[in-house]
Image (cartoon, rainbow, N blue to C red; front, side):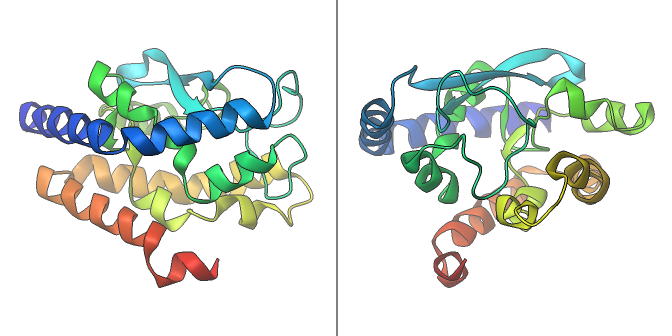
Length: 204
């Protein structure tokens, strides 16, 4: 199954990069004009079998403002105006299609955590989650597509993420590890697209 999944990832990510290249160029221009700094945000994440890699995202924060938690809430002053739009529609995630092509990620799989948060999982749970490539999307990403809004009212954003949100994500991740298939990935990709463009996306 892993061979079929990898072939699916390469085929679809290549097609998406080609089809979405005009949009990605427009986003790149908007990021470049919005604030000084690099086009891409690179950050270490934990990948397959615990191997670290540097994820790619369009930069949505001001350069030099690396203070604060490694999760963000709606209204975070570190985020640029363009960054707020990119995050709402998940456009900042598009460069991860390159991470899929290089083999660091999959289209569908548990979202890759920073080492700091991955350590909160029990060792046996961490091993299971890291037995598959991390993904751009999964059922947890769909369920928590408005995570920044959920965290906006928290007194301690980081503690709420670790104590409340991560345990729920863990169950989604383990379910994916035990049940994943190419057909299931297709369904998750379809649900992700609908979550971003469907009627519910325009009311949140």
